[in-house]
Amino acid sequence: MARELQVLHFDANEVRRTLPPDRLAGVALSERGEVWKPSRHPSRRSIVTWWWSETNRRLVGCRSLERLSTAMLLDFHPGVVDFGAWSAQLVWRERGRERRLVPDFFVRTVSGATVVVVARPSKGPGERFEREMSVWREACGQAGWQLASPQLPDRTALANLRWVSRRRHPRFGDAEVEAALARAFAEPRPLAEGVEDCGVSRLLALPRLYHMMWKRRLGLDWAVPLGPESLVGPMSAGEPEAMRRPFAAEQP
Image (cartoon, rainbow, N blue to C red):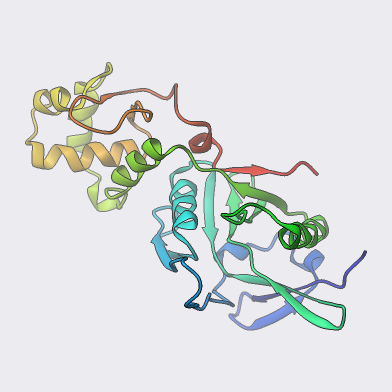
């Protein structure tokens, strides 16, 4: 059933506007301001929080801890050039009532594609979710967007990335220290051993090492809890699928 869909958003002049999806093809909604924020409900266990993105230097809203993990993975991925949350709301009328939907993230990729990321309910998709996804498919088809669901790695890889992400801010970059670490870890070796041999104090070396991992200049075995014996080096093989592809796009 065809619906008369509209998208509520802020335009380039920060004015709230409502337009059909096809009028927003090519518009970078990931850069726009928030038109909606979730409200805390006593019956819901989800926690609303924000992720500081190293990709775009902005706070990105997350309506649950799972979404916070997804934001971290999007921020970590080199194929993502921008992403934002709550910057557009899909509006339509059905059975005499106004309906509204907000995706979890709008993502812009290095290829220029716009990806609408919608997380599945934690208890599994039901009839309501499937109906909402059918509306999103219709909107994405009109606007030329891709519709995708987030993918999360296992707990160990996620915990490792969460630890590494604490040093994602550019202030932890240091070309001189990073050069010493790159030489020390030219071949995979235990973390503590390489830090000891790099010629830089441990207090200076460790934050820069984690920053290099965040920037993918050095890798590790993500399947093993990060610690002194973790192998670190110019490693990319073995990276979990969800870290290489943080969302699975539907085929048109």
